[in-house]
Image (tube, rainbow, N blue to C red; front, side, top):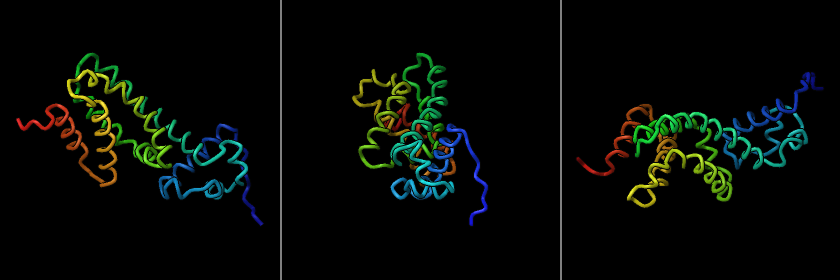
Length: 185
Protein backbone atom coordinates (compact mmCIF):
# COMPACT_ATOMS: atom_id res chain seq x y z
CA UNK A 1 0.00 0.00 0.00
CA UNK A 2 1.32 3.42 -1.02
CA UNK A 3 1.36 5.83 1.93
CA UNK A 4 2.59 8.78 -0.11
CA UNK A 5 0.36 11.80 0.25
CA UNK A 6 -0.53 13.30 -3.10
CA UNK A 7 -0.44 17.05 -3.47
CA UNK A 8 -3.06 18.80 -5.51
CA UNK A 9 -1.54 21.40 -7.80
CA UNK A 10 -2.97 24.23 -9.78
CA UNK A 11 -3.08 23.39 -13.51
CA UNK A 12 -0.29 25.79 -14.45
CA UNK A 13 1.93 24.36 -11.70
CA UNK A 14 1.25 20.77 -12.80
CA UNK A 15 1.95 21.69 -16.43
CA UNK A 16 5.26 23.28 -15.46
CA UNK A 17 6.15 20.28 -13.31
CA UNK A 18 5.56 17.98 -16.31
CA UNK A 19 7.80 20.18 -18.46
CA UNK A 20 10.56 20.24 -15.83
CA UNK A 21 10.55 16.49 -15.28
CA UNK A 22 10.38 15.79 -19.02
CA UNK A 23 13.29 18.14 -19.70
CA UNK A 24 15.43 16.36 -17.14
CA UNK A 25 14.53 12.96 -18.58
CA UNK A 26 15.13 14.14 -22.16
CA UNK A 27 18.51 15.53 -21.13
CA UNK A 28 19.53 12.32 -19.32
CA UNK A 29 18.22 9.69 -21.71
CA UNK A 30 17.46 11.48 -24.97
CA UNK A 31 14.05 12.42 -26.28
CA UNK A 32 13.60 9.28 -28.32
CA UNK A 33 14.01 7.07 -25.23
CA UNK A 34 11.40 8.81 -23.04
CA UNK A 35 7.69 7.95 -23.02
CA UNK A 36 4.69 9.54 -21.36
CA UNK A 37 4.77 6.55 -18.99
CA UNK A 38 8.36 7.35 -18.03
CA UNK A 39 7.45 10.95 -17.24
CA UNK A 40 4.40 9.84 -15.22
CA UNK A 41 6.46 7.27 -13.29
CA UNK A 42 9.11 9.86 -12.47
CA UNK A 43 6.38 12.17 -11.16
CA UNK A 44 4.54 9.36 -9.36
CA UNK A 45 1.30 10.17 -11.19
CA UNK A 46 -0.81 8.26 -13.70
CA UNK A 47 -0.34 8.76 -17.45
CA UNK A 48 -3.83 10.22 -18.04
CA UNK A 49 -2.83 13.17 -15.87
CA UNK A 50 -0.15 14.08 -18.39
CA UNK A 51 -2.57 13.64 -21.29
CA UNK A 52 -4.77 16.33 -19.74
CA UNK A 53 -1.96 18.80 -20.48
CA UNK A 54 -0.15 17.29 -23.48
CA UNK A 55 -1.30 14.86 -26.17
CA UNK A 56 2.19 13.43 -26.77
CA UNK A 57 5.87 13.62 -25.93
CA UNK A 58 6.29 15.67 -29.11
CA UNK A 59 3.88 18.27 -27.71
CA UNK A 60 5.87 18.32 -24.46
CA UNK A 61 9.09 18.73 -26.43
CA UNK A 62 7.59 21.61 -28.41
CA UNK A 63 6.46 23.37 -25.22
CA UNK A 64 9.88 22.93 -23.65
CA UNK A 65 11.52 24.31 -26.78
CA UNK A 66 9.24 27.35 -26.82
CA UNK A 67 10.16 28.11 -23.19
CA UNK A 68 13.89 27.68 -23.84
CA UNK A 69 13.75 29.77 -27.00
CA UNK A 70 11.93 32.55 -25.17
CA UNK A 71 14.57 32.48 -22.43
CA UNK A 72 17.33 32.70 -25.05
CA UNK A 73 15.56 35.57 -26.81
CA UNK A 74 15.18 37.52 -23.56
CA UNK A 75 18.95 37.37 -23.16
CA UNK A 76 19.70 38.10 -26.82
CA UNK A 77 17.26 40.94 -27.48
CA UNK A 78 19.03 43.54 -25.28
CA UNK A 79 22.28 42.83 -27.16
CA UNK A 80 20.61 43.45 -30.49
CA UNK A 81 19.10 46.71 -29.26
CA UNK A 82 22.40 47.89 -27.80
CA UNK A 83 24.32 47.15 -30.99
CA UNK A 84 22.61 49.96 -32.85
CA UNK A 85 23.75 50.47 -36.42
CA UNK A 86 27.20 48.92 -36.11
CA UNK A 87 27.44 46.72 -39.19
CA UNK A 88 28.78 44.06 -38.93
CA UNK A 89 29.40 43.52 -35.24
CA UNK A 90 31.76 40.65 -34.36
CA UNK A 91 31.45 41.43 -30.62
CA UNK A 92 27.71 40.81 -30.88
CA UNK A 93 28.38 37.42 -32.49
CA UNK A 94 30.75 36.38 -29.69
CA UNK A 95 28.23 37.57 -27.07
CA UNK A 96 25.51 35.55 -28.81
CA UNK A 97 27.83 32.55 -28.67
CA UNK A 98 28.35 33.03 -24.93
CA UNK A 99 24.61 33.18 -24.39
CA UNK A 100 24.02 30.15 -26.60
CA UNK A 101 26.71 28.23 -24.73
CA UNK A 102 24.89 28.95 -21.48
CA UNK A 103 21.77 27.25 -22.88
CA UNK A 104 22.76 23.56 -23.15
CA UNK A 105 19.16 22.36 -22.96
CA UNK A 106 18.19 24.57 -25.91
CA UNK A 107 21.05 23.14 -27.94
CA UNK A 108 20.01 19.58 -27.08
CA UNK A 109 16.36 20.17 -27.90
CA UNK A 110 17.32 21.64 -31.27
CA UNK A 111 18.86 18.29 -32.15
CA UNK A 112 16.20 15.81 -31.05
CA UNK A 113 12.82 14.57 -32.17
CA UNK A 114 13.60 13.46 -35.71
CA UNK A 115 14.17 15.43 -38.92
CA UNK A 116 10.74 17.04 -39.28
CA UNK A 117 10.70 18.25 -35.68
CA UNK A 118 14.30 19.44 -35.93
CA UNK A 119 13.47 21.37 -39.09
CA UNK A 120 10.46 23.01 -37.44
CA UNK A 121 12.46 23.98 -34.34
CA UNK A 122 15.39 25.27 -36.37
CA UNK A 123 13.00 27.45 -38.36
CA UNK A 124 11.70 28.98 -35.11
CA UNK A 125 15.23 29.37 -33.75
CA UNK A 126 16.53 30.93 -36.96
CA UNK A 127 13.66 33.41 -37.01
CA UNK A 128 14.86 34.74 -33.65
CA UNK A 129 18.52 34.61 -34.64
CA UNK A 130 17.81 36.48 -37.89
CA UNK A 131 17.33 39.71 -35.91
CA UNK A 132 20.88 39.38 -34.60
CA UNK A 133 22.32 38.51 -38.00
CA UNK A 134 20.39 41.10 -40.00
CA UNK A 135 23.47 43.33 -40.44
CA UNK A 136 25.20 40.47 -42.25
CA UNK A 137 22.46 39.98 -44.82
CA UNK A 138 23.65 43.05 -46.74
CA UNK A 139 27.13 41.59 -47.05
CA UNK A 140 28.81 40.89 -50.37
CA UNK A 141 29.13 37.25 -49.34
CA UNK A 142 26.07 35.14 -50.18
CA UNK A 143 24.59 33.10 -47.32
CA UNK A 144 26.78 34.81 -44.72
CA UNK A 145 23.88 35.20 -42.26
CA UNK A 146 23.03 31.46 -42.06
CA UNK A 147 26.73 30.61 -42.00
CA UNK A 148 27.28 32.81 -38.94
CA UNK A 149 24.10 31.47 -37.30
CA UNK A 150 25.21 27.88 -37.78
CA UNK A 151 28.69 28.79 -36.58
CA UNK A 152 27.31 30.21 -33.32
CA UNK A 153 25.01 27.26 -32.72
CA UNK A 154 27.45 24.57 -33.84
CA UNK A 155 30.38 25.98 -31.92
CA UNK A 156 28.33 26.25 -28.72
CA UNK A 157 27.07 22.68 -29.11
CA UNK A 158 30.58 21.40 -29.83
CA UNK A 159 32.01 23.23 -26.81
CA UNK A 160 29.40 21.66 -24.53
CA UNK A 161 29.82 18.17 -26.00
CA UNK A 162 33.61 18.37 -25.74
CA UNK A 163 33.42 19.96 -22.27
CA UNK A 164 35.60 22.90 -23.37
CA UNK A 165 36.44 24.83 -20.22
CA UNK A 166 37.94 28.02 -21.68
CA UNK A 167 34.92 29.34 -23.53
CA UNK A 168 36.26 32.89 -23.26
CA UNK A 169 39.15 31.99 -25.51
CA UNK A 170 36.72 30.26 -27.85
CA UNK A 171 34.43 33.34 -27.91
CA UNK A 172 37.42 35.57 -28.67
CA UNK A 173 38.52 33.24 -31.48
CA UNK A 174 35.00 33.39 -32.92
CA UNK A 175 35.01 37.17 -32.74
CA UNK A 176 38.38 37.30 -34.46
CA UNK A 177 37.21 34.88 -37.15
CA UNK A 178 34.07 36.91 -37.84
CA UNK A 179 36.18 40.08 -37.98
CA UNK A 180 38.81 38.71 -40.31
CA UNK A 181 37.52 35.45 -41.72
CA UNK A 182 40.26 33.29 -43.10
CA UNK A 183 42.44 36.31 -43.85
CA UNK A 184 45.85 35.61 -42.29
CA UNK A 185 46.76 39.24 -41.71
